[in-house]
Image (cartoon, rainbow over all chains, first blue to last red; front, top):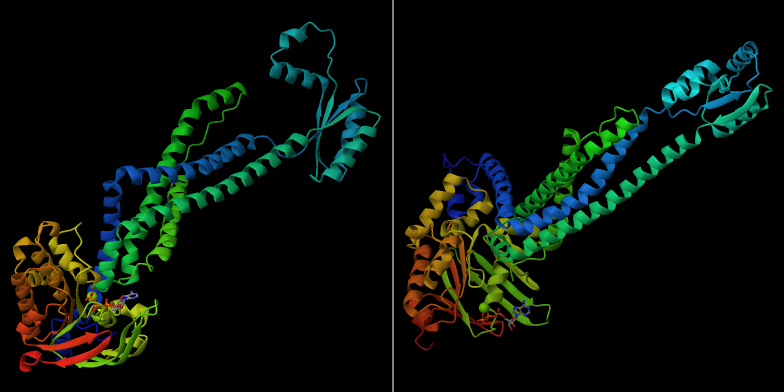
Length: 335
Length: 227
Ligand SMILES: Nc1ncnc2c1ncn2[C@@H]1O[C@H](COP(=O)(O)OP(=O)(O)OP(=O)(O)O)[C@@H](O)[C@H]1O
Ligand SMILES: [Mg+2]
């Protein structure tokens, strides 16, 4: 190895002998080799882009297939993130509403509330008097005027009980106890939809992960196939460079870069697709949010999202190219 | 420079292309390899260029035993050879210059060095003025000369050619042979496989003749009128 690192500016007898032997690498110093190795990488990087745009139809198609395959799970992921953000305002904690008998005295109810607060299963109790309930209802429903004419308040007092845990058996037993009280008219355990929502979100997440996996596999196959065609098209060239002393790494390099470029362009197009989709949906979503009195706005694909998508796509392109190259290049040997 | 010791090559088809061939070629010698079609000339050159491996026997080139050459070392071994093969021709998607530069690019030469050496090689074969052209527009003889420039651009110690004048007319063939002679004159060992007995006779060099994979003649035919 040190024989190769031999500055050609000072011809020693050894260097002279090697000159006579005529080995190219004998006269190329380590620094030169590193520089030319870097040069070759840079050249292959540029060359891959050149080749990509030299056949815009076929490379564009490949990139588009990759883009669509990536955009689907990416959009789903973004949708899920947004959905979770939208429902985040809704407390995931279950809550028990205890509707009291209309004739229950307020002082007795207050005692009962205190008693409940002492219960280890209970985290907190909020008392809503019939008057408060009415005011809230009028405000929320917009039916204020309709109720003005009524002689008496039709609404009962309510105790909002926040349980200490979310264990469903404990919740059920607490609800049962609340139901037994003489003061209680009815008990509503409004946790079912919260759980359902959480479960649906989880289901969506798993489905999108599964879909992402399958489509990533699809992207890999597309890249492997395109690179295989590239290799086939450049068969003659591969034979010649191998015959003049190209290492496998040298032969592989342009194809790996081509895979990388496919992935990058595919990722970029996927990001564009998702961005356009978000842009198209932003109007309707904010309209819908306004109807529900929410200030929710759709979160677009940001910079980290873009980097993740492009990076993931580039990685897939590289892996695909590597698989193709590992399979097909060693099979091409001069005969 | 080259030493074959009882070399046998049997292809996977079961064909014995070479059988027990032993020969020695010294440094800076110029040798012709001849014989009928199918005699094993190309096979011998493929063994020499590590395209094929011998079935039996050993091959030593410049002190290196080719039997012990690992696959990963083959590229480095080939960088010390100049190879002119008829069926591994020029690449038509790049200029004459870039074709000739291939062995240097592969070996990782600096840009400046590449330019200097490629021009020197093209100058030797008389095609310096065509460096920017695509080889597809060149004549057969010119293309062959570009191939030779590519083979000598890394100043190999050993130059190997398989039918380098295969489809050229006698005058062009003669010119190509003169080129090889010039490289030989500056110390390169040259081994050329050829059918062209007349041409070989005119060159007055050592000749090896193969027949059905056997080495049946090794000598200087011009000094032996009987041949
Ligand atoms: N890859 C191969 N697989 C199987 N048999 C082969 C292979 N290459 C050559 N042969 C056989 O080996 C024998 C020698 O072939 P080779 O190519 O060395 O002959 P040659 O002397 O170069 O002939 P030509 O003058 O026609 O080029 C022939 O019989 C040929 O059929
Ligand atoms: Mg042959």
